[in-house]
Image (cartoon, rainbow, N blue to C red):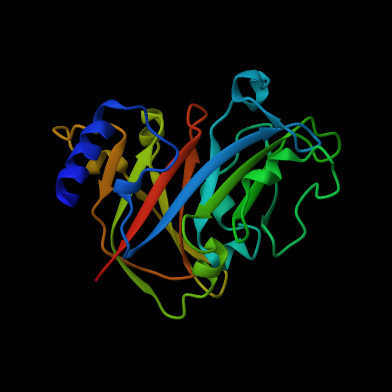
Length: 240
């Protein structure tokens, strides 16, 4: 009965629009992340993507994991992947641990989308006279992301990474795999997504990155978040 239900549900996924959360992608022995992007005015009130001015219609950097660098405001990661021209990196914080940006604004509706432990990164167009903000949210679907990545005592042995997106444009952007050193230097190498595409696979919005590695506080992955995308699901499958 369970098997029959799973087959029926999988067939439904093939023809239905992509939902916000995709249960078939996620496994129990894994770290399941979701990345989202929000546009707001200067008070933190959400603006629909279709209404944002042309200068905001960019592909924005995502600095994922790499807790060593996150504590330093992703200083090294910004050297591997720059923000678009005219856009400035404002800050990053852990929701619920540090004082939220624009916490005193009564119009700060974007905060309603965040949960405790989310890693939030904010971009703006001006430090002196901003016209709005872009918020990148990284959230774990179970537990608090900041707790997971900051409490890796030695390493987590990952055997592959699954990506599922709401826009296939997102899969056109390669990743940067970055290894940080305690001394403050880093090594960066490209992760070419095209190498992992499976032309005979039915789901064009899905990629399985067959990469066996050890995840530590000193490893991060950086990539651009496509303007056409709204969110993406990322699954780090852990060895049994």
